[in-house]
Length: 155
Image 1 (spheres, rainbow, N blue to C red):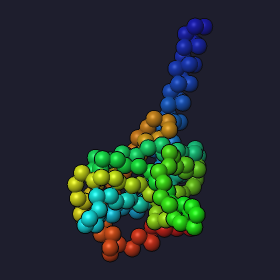
Image 2 (cartoon, helix red, strand yellow):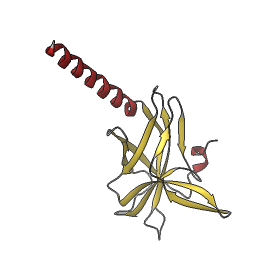
Image 3 (tube, rainbow, N blue to C red):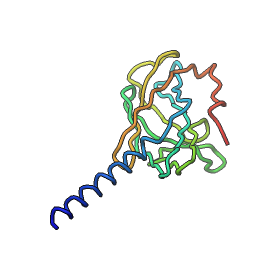
């Protein structure tokens, strides 16, 4: 009987781990870009579409990169009739839904770049999920002055 309980407990743990890993595994990243930094600025941004095709809600609780001193999740919001950018603690993506990281909304902020990033290069970020899993995301670096960022902005 003791063996049966251990077996059931182990099976239950494996099932929970598989379900948790599935949360992040089903998040598809589309149109992932980072803007090349412009002269005089050592900060830049990344935009993309987060597509949660799973049956489970997903929460991103952090982001990291090797190209900047700090990499953060940010959002724009109105405050006293002004658009204000703020760091956010997390981004939720409901099951079966999409969240757009785009101008005037959520985005990834690179603060104090260690190096210039140039159009045509690639870089990457790592998202951290609330279930402890991580997901690497490849970003195409584009010229902020000529790239049509509006194609990443959806309502």
